[in-house]
Length: 123
Image 1 (cartoon, rainbow, N blue to C red):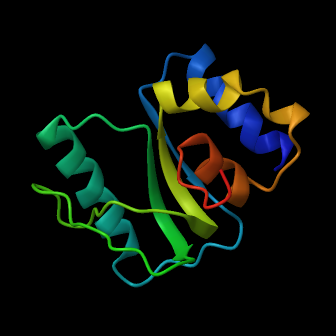
Image 2 (image 1 turned 135 degrees about the vertical axis):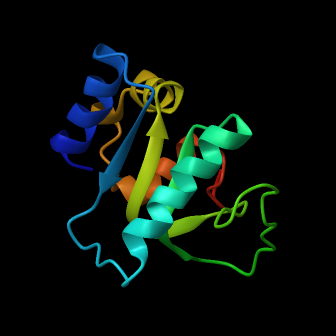
């Protein structure tokens, strides 16, 4: 995990932002990638679903059943994930990540996110 990621989470809380989109440096968009992100945001705003973290790209690590979220074109429930490419984080999600004192843990963000949202296989 990098100090820049933690700084983003701190800014979300400090500035009272409702959400932030974080793109990792190894993200490569598909041709319709930005349009899909826009549709995810539209669906979130329209459904009023409560959420803290939404992966925009990841690698599924285990054979887990994922269920499509109703009223959303691109969202499914996820279990343990790795190789985080990007994510949308709510203000409450940023608070949860910061409350766990991430600088004291020193893990890659790919490990930290699943741990903090109860999706890591080694709980």
